[in-house]
Length: 83
Image (cartoon, rainbow, N blue to C red; front, side, top):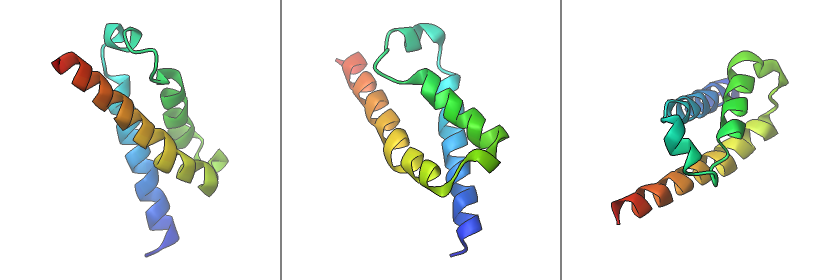
């Protein structure tokens, strides 16, 4: 597969995940300081507005580290709220 296509797909995934996180209510975010809300938003802004500054390694780290961590944290939050 074309490297540019994969990079664009990765950027889109990151932007979508961060946009969803950004729309969560502020009181919800305040109740869950274990999630790096500011970092997620910064990464989204960097990718969306300054993609010339994002190298492949940084994007890969976000996709394989930060996004899975966000999903893990949100899953833990959901589990705690269900019980």
